[in-house]
Image 1 (cartoon, rainbow, N blue to C red):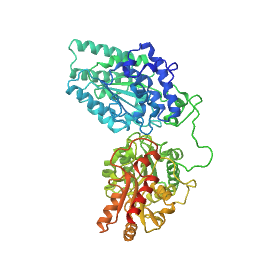
Image 2: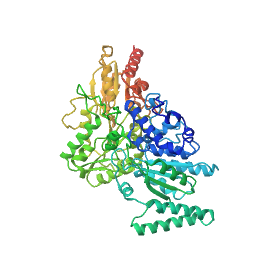
Image 3: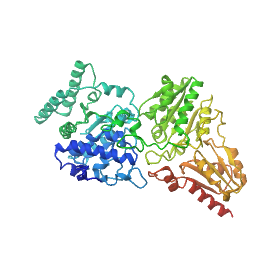
Image 4: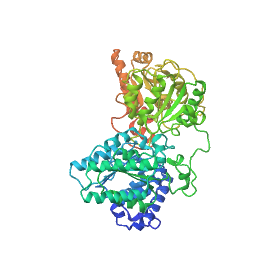
Length: 634
C-alpha cells in the first residue's frame, strides 16, 4: 500500500475516518479511490466500470450518513467496490472474489456495513423500505435508510413493486437513482427512455424544499396536505413542461437530476435530504467507468474486463498462441442465428444480457427478431410464452441463477400450456468467482418436478447445437437447455444440426465393474478419469436429459448389478441422482448408488476448478468416489 500515492485514502480505515476530513478534501479522496480500484482490478479481475461510476456517490454517502447505524442498501452489488474499500476492507481487497477471500458482492455475513445481500438486481427498494418501516416500529428515530438503485435495475418488476409500497407505507426512505443509462449493455425499455427525458429545475427544487421546511415548522404541512401539494406541484410542472413525473405521481418527492460526479454538490443535497420526512427520490446522472478513459468509452467491455494494463488500458486476454475451444455462449449465439435463418418463426429474448449470452450475434444480424427486455426475467418468460401462443418459437436465454425469479412464469405461463418456449439457462452449474448468488445450482432440482417440461444439459458444444436444433422442431413443448459458463472442450465445435430423440442418453464407455451416469459438462471430467487403466471395464453414460430419463439406459445399468455413480453440477438433493434413485425404487431395483453433486449449502466463490475440488464433482472427486465403490465391491 503506497501511503504517499494514496495520501488521504491511506488514512481512511472506516467511514468515521472519512468524516473527520474537510469537505475540500473529498475530490482528492475520490481521485485516490478511483485510482486504487483501477490498480487493484488490473491484476485481480472484477467488476470495474460500475464501481468507478459511483465513486463520488459512495464517498458522499459515507461522509453524510452515520454508517453502519444508518443503512445503505446497495442494488446490483457490483457497484460497491468503493464501499468495501471505505468500510474496513482495503487491506483485504486484494482477495476480492478469491477462494476464502472477500465476497464478490456485499453480504451481511462479511461486514456490518453490508446491510443486505445484493447479487441480483432490483431488490434494494423493497429491502430498504422494510428497514425504514422497522426503524419506525422499533422507535429508532435517528436511523436513516438509503436505497441505491442503478445499472438498469429500475427496469425490474420488484423495483416497481417496492415503489408502489413506498408510496403507501409511512416511511422516511431515501431512494437514490444512479442513472447511467446502462446495465451491462445499454439499458432498454420505457423507464430508461423516460429517465433520459426527465428534467426538473434545480432552483425550483431548492425553493420547494425551503418552503416545505417552513410550512412544517409552522405546523401547516400534515401528511395529507403534503401529498396534496406534491400532486398539485406535479400537475403544475406537467402543464409547463408537458411531462409527467412518475415518482411524484406516486407521492414520492423527486429531486434532480443532478450531476452525480460533483462530490460537493452531492454532499450538499444529501445533507438537505437526510432529515426530510416522507419518501423521496434523488436522481443522479453518472457515467459508467468514470475517470478511466477505456471504461468510459466502452462500458460494456469494461464492465468486467479481466486483467489489464492499468497504464495503457490494454486488456490481457491470454488468448494468444494455440487455438482454444469457444465459449458455450458463442456456440449458442452462432447456432441461434443459424437456426433463425433456417426458420423465420424463431425469435430471441434476453433480460439485459445480449452480450453476456451472445444473443448480440443474432441481434446484430436480425434485430427485428431479437428482444432485450431489460432486467425482467419473469417478463422475459411470459413475453416468450405470449409469442409462442401465437405461433413463434422463442429462444429465451436467462442466466440460471437469475431464472430463479421466473419460476412461476415458467410453471404458470409456459409449462401448464405446453408452449414451445426454449428456455436456455446460461451459467448453469458453478460459475466461479461470482459466488453463491450466481451459481446455477438449483435449476434441475427446481424444475424437475414441473410437468410438461423437457430438461436437457449438453456435455459439449456438439450436443448443445443438436439440442438447440431438436428443441425448435414441432411438438417439443417447453424445452429447457442448461449449459455452463465459459469454454467447452471442442476446438472443432461446428457439427451438423441433427435431431436427438428426447429422453435418450448415450453410452460413451462399455463396462460391468461400475456404471457412471453423468449429466452435462461433468461428463468431460468422467471421461478424463476413465483414461486411467485402473478403471477399465467401467461404463459411462451421458444421460443428456434429466427429464425425461432414459429408461432403457437405467434398465441396462440395473441389470448389470454393479455400483452406480451419478455425477452432476447442480445440487445433489433433487437432481439427477435423486431422479435415478426414484426410478430404481419405482422399478424394484436396489443397486449401490453414490450421488456426486453440489452439497446442501451455498457454495462460496473461487475458481471453477477450486470449487469442483471442494465439492467433489471434478475429476479428483470422481476418481476418489469411483475407487471407493470398486474397493467396496471387491
